[in-house]
Image (cartoon, rainbow over all chains, first blue to last red):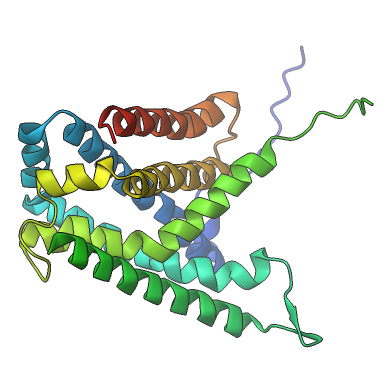
Length: 132
Length: 122
């Protein structure tokens, strides 16, 4: 075997040199917060299956300052995910042609964000109704 | 007719990623606000919004079951796919192990959710 040790350029912080890639890394990392939130809900579902005492324990844990802080962070991160998801949509989806013209990127992003707003309000309304 | 080419499984993972990304973009922020902030602090919503009786009723309803499963499973399939593909960006040359870890945890979480939801009855 040869003892060649070819130079491999380090990847450390490559993305920090360009604002475009900094934004890219931030929006990709929102997935970590989505995963963390889903795991908390999974724990909640398991606790629900274990009975009332277990469920109350989970609800009490949600009231802790640590949990509240985490959820504020999740909220900010997932809101940013929502924004970037629809911001990128014009380049991730196939072109839509309406009346012989391609629908502009701002229309796609705007409709997506509007849909998210409507979905959020409908969800809040439904939860409110179910809770009464 | 056999074409010798192996069919790629990428569309399945990409489909789950797309569905989860869309679902979390539409409902994620409000869900976090409701379950993690408003209910624990007693803001806006009635105090018993997530009481045991209410949550059991929701989780025993077929639509409720579907919503809970969609939230947990799709959020995790979305995150697993995005994290797996971002490993390269931080200099980790992801192989089979990383793939198993990412998609495997989403798969296990999906199975656990489905089992619990079924055990809660209808």
